[in-house]
Length: 426
Ligand SMILES: [Zn+2]
Image (tube, rainbow, N blue to C red; front, side):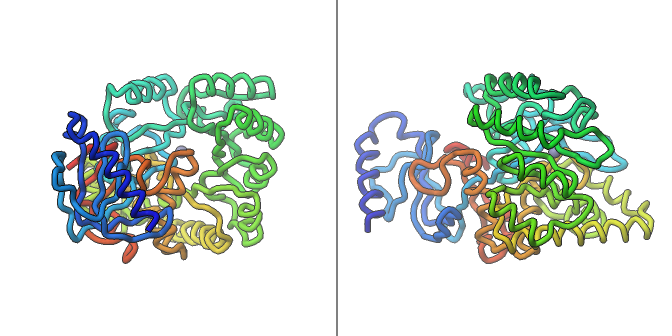
């Protein structure tokens, strides 16, 4: 009842301004079922929105409504998807020339997959900064760009092999770089721990100093991990999230419990670690959505690679997959918050498309469909400190689906239309 009163008063508030020209830019989605992962509600209501956000949920269509109206009878509305770990380089495949996208092009491509926002965790700092500035000034379109801008690593550490990045060798440098990134409003701080790996790693002491420094600036930290020792280092440092799964073993039930107790969020990039094999040996790339977001030569590159793979390589890939799945199963059992990150830009991923694969894999590892949907919507927005859900006040970025992802998570790929900040994208 309370909800109804709020809905009604909001409608009256809006109706009071219906003669203003802004009303023409309003969009009314009628007769759809609204699936809100933030409270797991499934309600058939009309949804009124504009570029500023969701305005109201209505039980009847206002008779004097003059904005754009779209009948979505039989369809399902979910919040726009967020990719929590990507690189806007474009798609790549073995035996194929890579695509070169950059932030502006990637932001357009991923919208096709329902991804209305993404977190770029390292690329060209100046370019990312500039594109984000242009987008936030309303000068360029596309999915919302959030970014760490740079990747803070040890001198010669991971990330530095891909191009210019910021390196930290001591506490003074950690403070200086984080201060500079904070001044440029980095949305998150990315740190790298690769203890026991080939490349130099931030020490546990430096990781802690950096995490404390980021916290002083009110910016959340995401740590790229490579081994089980990195997870211990991340827990001790008090960071907010880790990304990737350890390569040297399985996250045990005990370790998963410790992650949960310390409220660490995990962005596993499971699809990135396991999909290269499936791109070659299953029908995944025949999906209409995969074909929409990647060039033909990329899809063919995987087919060609399949024919070149030895039985031994296939066996190794299967074993690696089993190891990663076991880590995810233990994380799910311990109720660790999982977020979907594709690590797109790497082999075995496609920009935008891979968030759907990540959700599918979470469900295969035991996560419920509502939780999987939350991992790519409300939980991700919560991490970014943005309003979540499908209630008035939330961002008007939505995906309209032909079928319910609560019935079958793979239905997230059955996209009828995408709405980004109140604007209907076909
Ligand atoms: Zn990455």
